[in-house]
Length: 108
Length: 123
Image (cartoon, rainbow over all chains, first blue to last red; front, side, top):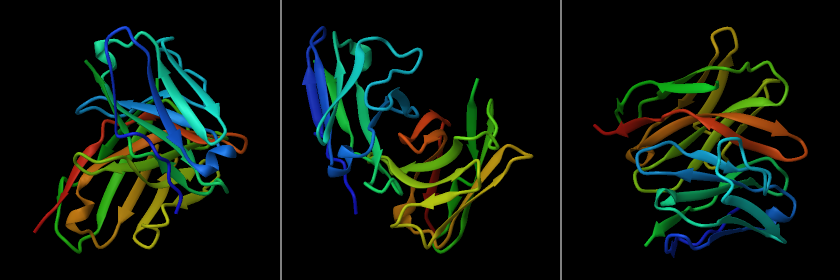
């Protein structure tokens, strides 16, 4: 099986920068995508193709890649950014979709 | 504007077959590069991909559920149907359908999601 590894939790104070990582061997060949999920709501795409931002997503959300790790960065975190964040990619052959285990972002 | 909505039973008994329908608007499943996927989320747990179907009738399934799941589409009705056999209590989850954008260069991602529907498996 193929896995994407995320830290279970990240905590930051308002105005600081939050960085959430997602690691997996296949990320050397596959793009990473990120979703935000607030309690009781459906996930929302916030970053696709490693670093592209969909229309309507604030500029404080950005993505990057280094080797087999993709990172979601939220600059100037706001209280409304408190949510679960999931990365998504595929196995190295591109056959199967995989989600990371999710990271709970807490804004202190 | 793309919208998707899941429909189906909220309660199924163990061993029964679950059938869920995703009705969508704002896109066509005959457009190249477009697909629809199903993802579930057990209460308090992570997202779990189940299956997807593409504009060209291509399908892919989670290897752990491949023997129990089937996905089909009806382009005339703008619907995608997921069936899952032999349901067990561990299948209790919110089931989402989502609009997919696909390319052989970047793979696929879920651009827009439905609101989800909670399915409980219990006798």
